[in-house]
Image (tube, rainbow, N blue to C red; front, side):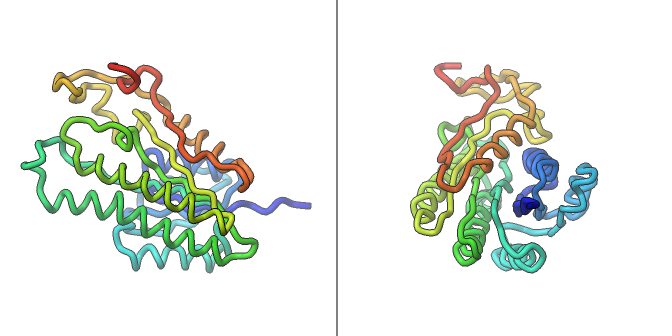
Length: 252
């Protein structure tokens, strides 16, 4: 008997953590819908998948647009018929400035992507998983070390990541009745283009600037794959994965 391929949606699949997770899932036999704003970078991710590319579907999506999110999950239903995993990953940052210098438009962009977008995608995935047969699936939200403690001048990003934790906790509870497992991976200093500055020097809690260690992003992809390897009667509610020597535990 041939085992059916799991169906996954990865948001923010065009770069960084989303790209790494997408490639690992495709390599591991998943069918994956790649979602993100830029068709070109999504296609570049798929082109890196080798033979696994045959099982990928590029779906340009702005997660801050609820209609676009609905269209994404309608496409997944049409092409694949069900959904087993959502990696709710899309996110943006903001310039490190004092709160009174943070533009309202910047605040709204971060909230619309990191919080509203995560909610729209979780909502659509939850609905698919609740109504499909067999019922159930897994949602993994990308939180952050910032879901625990902030960096200086990061109010928009930190606020949204704390809010994502609230989504994770609530949907983990709500999902029990429908065989939907919901967890969160909080990532610190994975080496991606987004974290390149950390190796050169970033602001610390005492307002000094220091370079920070990073880790291979493949560690994150392996962790997400592990979280979804569990049967649906088991869940990792929260996983923190970070560069071993980054300044988080204790006083740095």
